[in-house]
Length: 363
Image (cartoon, rainbow, N blue to C red; front, side):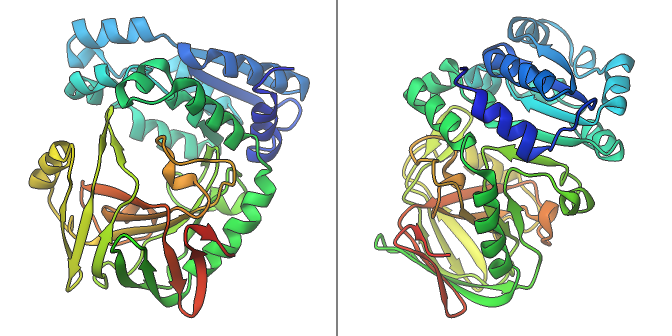
């Protein structure tokens, strides 16, 4: 039995509900091939028709580092045709080397310049898609972040093998609460005390399952994330007052930003960090629009996810509060800046109901 069998079956049966004879593209980089091969096998076992698409790491970096930007980010007519004919798409992202990504950032933007077109065509084609976070786990990334690769990989496999239906049920309950008009209070023993309002906007339940409702909503509603899940919403952008002190670091391009502190007054934020603030300071300085407004409020749902890696937003009871961009999920902040902050020991009240108590979900 493959260690990826439960993950593969969850994606096929629960996330995308693959039917016999459906055409499914499985895309992977080299470091994700073992999981991709198990997914291809389980697709065949389910009677589907898979096609495996490989993104080769060595060829990618040779192209990025030696070719001009105009030669990068090109998609062949045959690949577009395959996408148009597919019923579903399963993606293990890359590349593996995040430090090399950071060094080549301007040319990486050219290499992935087709992304917006890809999402537009996939949505138009009625694709059901899943992005597998195992693709973000590699020895190179673990080394850059100073993480235990084996422990990180096992955490992702475990979190992707849970009962998606149970995650979805909890997510619907939390999303219903976050979709109300209500006052929210977030507090923690580390000095966090923040209040803001919800405006009755529809919350997103990222539960690892693409259903009919997902296909009808949002530009990327057809794409779910595995492992799931988080319920999140765009709150009233101008309503935040108080202080948030993150107790978990924020990952960025192979480093961690630590000791983040956000202070809101009259709905506008200032922020500081104790370590590795420079990348965000540069983005902050150049960003336009409402970069200093509250953008996102989310609650983690996955019982098998654990803090200490890059997926803190998925951990059951972890609270994410994001600063800046939220237009993609129903907000009004149109800016190219986003800073996510994470609390693992928070207490959250939505109206009169306690949703999280000392980092433990109560819904």
